[in-house]
Image 1 (cartoon, rainbow, N blue to C red):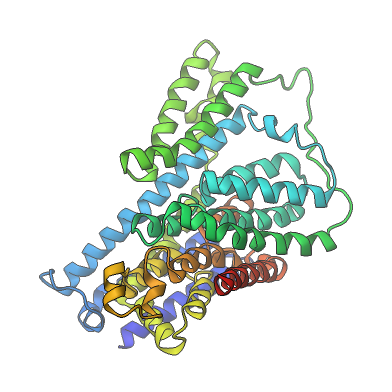
Image 2: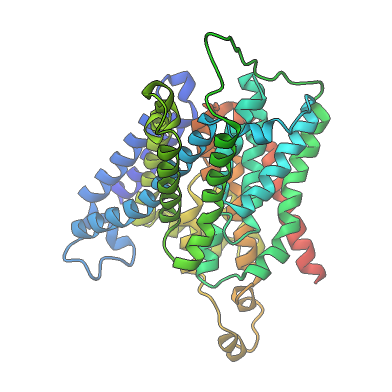
Length: 458
């Protein structure tokens, strides 16, 4: 029991170190990795005392083997996310090296803060539904670097990108990993989730946009590009720029199609797209000298990938998975069921909890705790009102998709989109907490209220 509590203490202390990265002057990736390693070390050394607390280990020869097996299982799932992240970041950097984003940035001519805010918000919202919230965040933050010069001002737009990406991903079966989990598990259908969650997700975005529109005035400053005849010439031709942009965006959009057709994980699709782009760019620039070719090649842009943010992602997901293995998350889910007992209240609480810990194990735990009810089982139970929430496209599953997808916006490390934005723009945790968290919370609650209101009226 002491080891069980020690794991929770380690996670909380590690979380605080991440939150206070700047005052401590310790990189958040170091804190995340140390937290994960210590948590798993305590778990494996105390496996005999911790694991009997949960129903596990029936097929393992001993508890230590069970812990190692669980670690490998979680690492496999985390690696899929990391390879997807690295593949998407490489494609985005390759487009950027070819100045492909000029196709979009040249069309955003406004210099007014409020207009840019709404433009970025809606582009992110709909792009996230077509791609996913993680990839969309990487693309949009890269675009913001081309549009907004001052970093702290760019953080406001990055905050809206996080909120919009999570909101846009919630109403699409391929827009967020948790929604995809529910879709694959047959808890929700494509038509059901789009019809029921589009309006709540839109409200989740509109509330922060309206609030920020009341305070953001004036114009923003675009980055100045210094061009001299001797120093720099256009690195690519318009044909090369447009080709790489179309192929790059096409590779990102192709991922959900590839997954649907082949049933292979998303990282396979993103690596396939990267492979195609790699070959195309090698052929495209093979006639150029090494000095001009290297910055435009995959080998060249790989050096620009932020490995620190990838390691942070690895550490935080491993730390959360240790709590999932030990049973902390299942215990929290059980407490929610016993203390709240209302599907709306449970989901809102799960959404808020997902801003602290990763939403994937929370949703996985909820899917295990509250099994999918078939129409036959519901009929046999006499149409029980509580069980009716757990049928396909039931209120519990739909609201779970919304809450788990958008609740993570309340804290910068509460979602994959937030972690990606934090890593790319070096956003301060405390700054996000002061400037964006309340807006995200208001949007989250307004969207949940919209869903509940529509459900009651129906």
